[in-house]
View 1 (cartoon, rainbow, N blue to C red):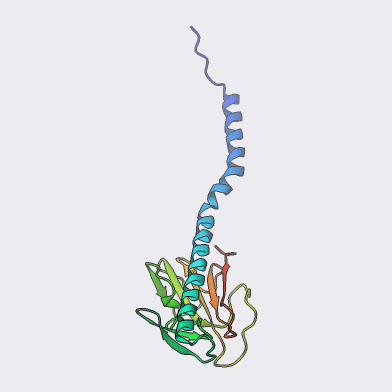
View 2: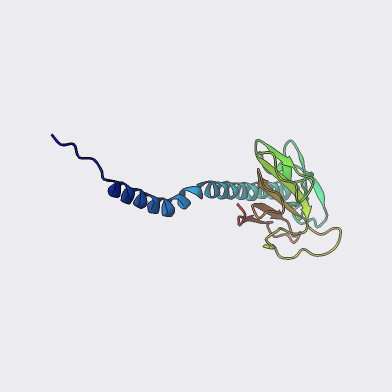
Length: 180
């Protein structure tokens, strides 16, 4: 009885075919972590919008929804800084209370890489992608806050930004995902 195996040419052809398939299929699988990160950012964005709406509802109940001055409202366990009934982009007085992510840390600089699961920075004037309309000049103008994942900094285009323009309209909440 003769046992037939694969010839060297057949093996080489199979290896080449598998290699060609891998070149086209591998990039799809390599982007899974980027897609997951963007999905998380979308969840954070939705949570920020919901929390901001809750604060606005609370401000309406307290009669502070049309106040153009910065003020603090009691939102349960914390006091949150608001203007025109919406939270401000100030990290320590407002934004950090809007989300209850398990591990979120304040960063002290735009270039500081996040070492926690999530980091945040507020009181900024721009976002790296320039996706928000310019903020008015002056010390009492609105500021931008941003939340970004581990391994990124404020200056990277990977995160969720939040800005209350102090005009009574809901805050602008958006995603930067170019660097994700």
